[in-house]
Image (tube, rainbow, N blue to C red):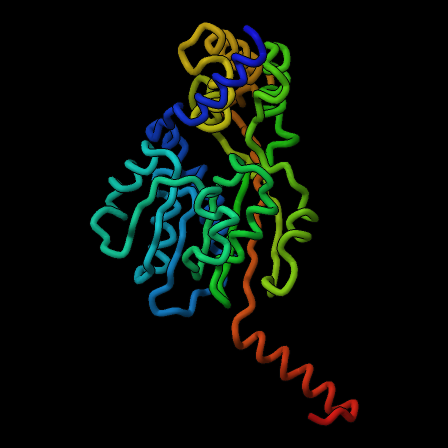
Length: 309
């Protein structure tokens, strides 16, 4: 197949390919643990009815965690997948809640540069495992922080698969199958912490906390690592080859499944150990009290030096 036609097909498929909520939910506990860990590091919201954005809400799992902690919050659940958004709307913990709304829109559209000063503000923007599908994440994070109210928080979690065999094998095999170099990108957090610090630190950022955690997950099943990545990263790669069910995609899947079995052998108890590294970031905007305290400290310092107002 010619490179140009494959590029066109890939870009079209990125919009047309449907997510599979049931497949995604197969490892719900493993996917929600990082969200819970991220939420535990978010400072307490002081507003009586805080405004929360779940950016890339998926099937609604993180949204439920947010509401359990902030039951009086006004929440917008945002996702670009109609299938995942429908699953979130059907979640018993979210459906029928008057203060919970849903919007089918990409994160990049919601935080487009044109909306930097005109879009709604939030007390908390929470993005759990969703920004890896976006371009220039540090710059996007800066635009997101600009839409946080004073004293509010931006909290992000992204898979960091740069050194992970499951995703390195995906890259390696894709190169062997020969797609054009610009037609495939395995989603990952490709920025170093310094890039986020450079983008976020400044007048809009009172504190910045970044860390990484590797979760050693014990998975069960015949091909658990394959099943884990299939509805997320692998789904997007298969679109390069015409989507699941096409001859090219079937050949790629078979080869990839075999290499995963070698890279992740089963333990003696039948489970498969799957280490998965994730990158976390919590940035807080300065509150009005922070600004006043800083001004007062500066004023007192000038007085101590003999300056008179």
